[in-house]
Length: 149
Image (cartoon, rainbow, N blue to C red; front, top):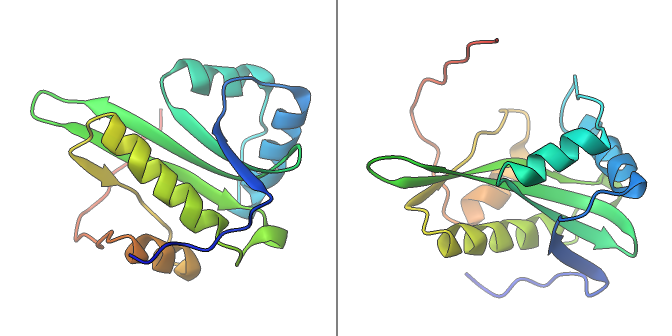
């Protein structure tokens, strides 16, 4: 893949500290991906961090303008990675931020010895699909089941 051209004023980091600004920014991003987003709290974001999930954030100055999460599950036969909640603020889209988040998440998965990396994406998110496919993700023919608890 060709080297991505990204904004130089965007910084990327794995979230380790929860502040009121972090909560506000993440809470503002979630409705841009989900029709029924949960309301974020500092306690819940801290729980995400403590669970071992790595939340990668993209910042413009102090403001979080994008997120992507890496969840790793160690199974008897392999180590699987899951990409969750890739969101870039609508006003920052088209600037290479999602591509950079994905590039960094893929590298993080390699560093954690993942055998593969999975993600799900709603059919209506066509622009996100093109980002995933540009990295070599392939659509799978699989049934996804969910049990609400």
